[in-house]
Image: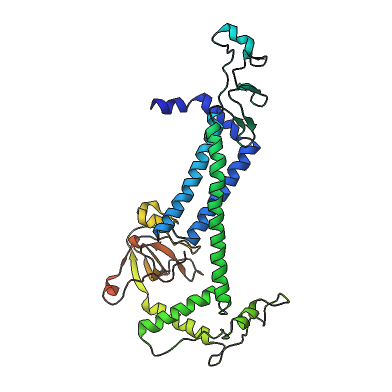
Length: 359
């Protein structure tokens, strides 16, 4: 407690004004932007909750940020250490070997120099650094050097994550282009296989727009003129398919979704927060990493869930006449522990398990 009180002193709080300078503002902005972007890209590239490697990678990234900021603020606020005002050597005869500072009205201790910016004599002064808005000297030399060491190491880790994220995105993008698909169409094809397998149907879904040649598929996107082929409304199709093969499959999947959806009753209010702290630690940390909305729930309402994760469900709120006219549907994610399956669905239906996760 005594240490804490010695830190929180008026004199130390006055040091906060060092932040009001172009150097710390730029330095902290760069650290914040790089750290934030690296963490976001890390989540997209290597989701930390799925594997040990992802967790270690994310913890290391946080560790770099904490260590960089710790040494940066240490160098800034601890400062270099100043020669006491009016200082004299212990033995008066030694003053003949020392310089006298007229500004500080004191002798300059060995290895100390006067800083015009700080307007004080600095112990073991190295230089005045604008990025920390303070001198580098006796007390903060180690912290400043560690900051200069850790910052590039953290940047190397962040750059590796940036490269891997872009490589992963580029690889996935080129893979679907060479098959003449989009991300949504790839998902539709996966769901088509799941639907056929679930009902054990004697049919095969053939993606109609894959021309069977990677080069032909590639040329539909990349052309010498820069404009894609066709008019965007009608497309070349492979033999045995027609223009509406994909849309017919989509209609089948929508009908199947209605059949396989499960009715839930809301047993606990939910505010619609992205990461609700009051719904449990697991719910907080496993919030779906997607731009899809969350829906607000009130006790007694009914939800038709169509898909879900372990601790979250996605579905449509069953509307009644009390809702605003013109609102056709309200859908989004909500925590599983806020709802319970309706008794009529318990024996006949299965709770929707995770479809393709948007991580």
